[in-house]
Image (cartoon, rainbow, N blue to C red; front, side, top):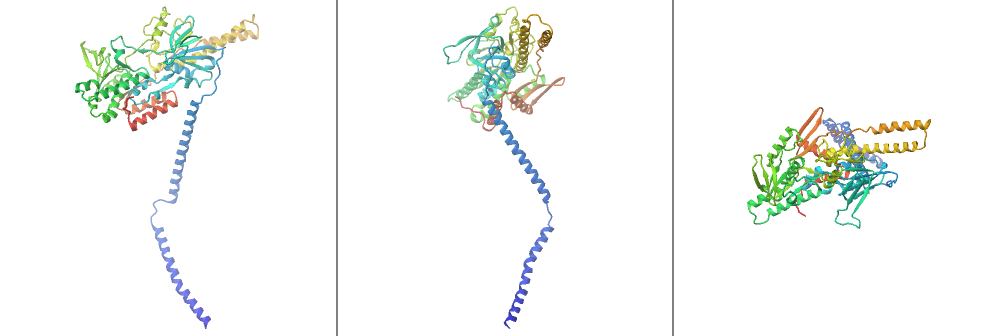
Length: 550
């Protein structure tokens, strides 16, 4: 009986448990059926493709960032750690380079120093990227961002290059000597000496032309050297702070905040545009009570500004300046610059005195004293008042090929621009390579001829040397290739006159402004300068220009 009861109880238990099991499983089946019948927006295959694509993009981005960072570090590290150099070789000829501007620096970059013992003499131990000086004058760029120490270039050359910070005071083309002096604040026991050269590259540049107008040197700021840009920046901030001093009359505030720029070339135009940007982007925020008093005037003696650009771009520049409230006074000559005013003569011949706080002088170049003294030593060949006469190989006339001259100190058919000097420097590097080859062949030929009568194999060797010498002597003439003209005109606009086909392409606007920036970045001589300038531009974009006065 107990066994039967147990079996009956077990059967009841199984009977009661089965419906519960079925009830538990049925909802899951219905849920699964409902889920499978719902529309699927993204198939697993599509999700897999997107996941693969995003993973690929992420990997490419990671590799690009890491690779670019590694390359940047490698190049920067290489620039900072130059290797060993060959010492001076007494058997090599001495090549002296006077200057560290566009021409001299371009020459040093391309020159093969294994052929010569090279000595660089310049009153400054760096190269200055002059087209960006107006940006330094208003605080857009840090002064050290646009200079490249000369030793950064020479220390990476194969043979040691001596760099001497000194000013050339005399050049003797007959004795082949250069006299130079240390003009720094701290001097040693020896402050002047003379060096003998075999070849000389004369690239001392020019200084600012004042046309003997009274008061220019005493009262105007120049825009030629790095110190000029620093002085202009400080004086402009001085005018602002003096205008903000309590008790100033409205007339005095207007005078203090009137900035006059003399010179309608690229430097004067770019400086006017930079000052306008400084006003609109920064000074209106920090000097709201003074910003309406700031006035910019541009004085030009010629009938129009930017004579090297097309008429279309000149008109575009003038209309842009008109919108920016920058006055352009063409056909106007400066007669005198006083402490608190400037005297000009208009196209009708009448003179008037214009009150102003500061004058920036950007009106032409003139020869340095050492260049005038050199010309006086060669009176038969150096008769051009504009500069040194050179032939088509850039050899200084009257020096038998031992002196070469380039850049602003010469009188050629080309405009005295950085572009011309840079191409001349590259050309001279190729010329000196040929000269070294010529000198080596001449020495070898002299040694061969000193052996007396030449017959057989030695005669053939002599004839071969003569043919090589004749080939080397046929050096190509210097030929300038114009790469275009650029100028920044303010309000994030620029103009460009570029060679295109058989004519020129004249463009202007915001897109040209971006091209102007990229072109200047590419022309800077090192990764260091490009990085510093780009970071300065970004800093100003985010934080604005500094208005503190040191």
